[in-house]
Image (cartoon, rainbow, N blue to C red; front, side, top):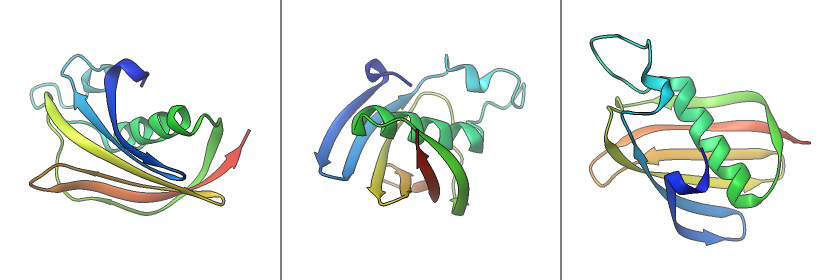
Length: 112
C-alpha cells in the first residue's frame, strides 16, 4: 500500500497512527466471498506491514506472527486507523476506528 492510500496522523520515534480508507477497489476483495465482500485477515496484516515499512523507511520480512486476533470484520469503503509499534525485532499493530477494534497482532521481523 503506497503513501497515496493512507494519511499519517501521528509518528513519534517507533510509533505511528495512519488513517486508511479500505476501498472496494482493492484487489484483496477479488474472489474472496464473491457475494459478501470482506477484507481477508492476511490482507489486514499485509496493509499494516506495508505501511510500517514505508513510514519507518525500513525493509523487513515477517518471520512469525503471534498474538494475532481478528475481532470484527472490515467491509469495503471503511475508514480505519492502523497503529504500529516498531521495537527491536517486533512490529505490533492494531486496526481500529472510533467504534470498534478490528484486529491486532505482533510480528517477529527481520530487517533486510
